[in-house]
Image (tube, rainbow, N blue to C red; front, side, top):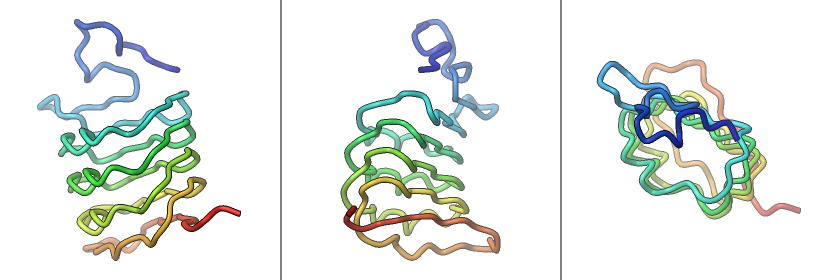
Amino acid sequence: TKSNGWLDEFTSHCKWYGVMCNEDSKVVNLTLENNGLSGRISDTIGNLIELRILDLHDNDLKGSIPSAVGNLLNLSSLIVSFNDLTGEIPAGFASLSKLELLHIHANRLQGTVPFLVLKGHNDSSFIADCGSPS
């Protein structure tokens, strides 16, 4: 696990490994792919309202994708492929009008991806393999 800065109480979260902030110290990118993470994605992810990129692919995350992801209205990339996520795809995905990249494959998610309104986006990538694994 790459955790530079995460354990130092005096280091700004903007200097933590995998975290990028804007000029107001709001988290805009969280890129922790292939980092040995395990556990669940917390509902508090929805508090990162400036988040544009969430990349947690190729870890050992379990449980469902929190419905709070629907609060991330600035999100342009959501990449959570190659984990062990289960459950239904949140209906809140329909609110993500800036989403251009959605990779949720290689999990055990079920259901359908809600209709995404892609305002002004012609180039987008959506990869899913939802359904019961064989």
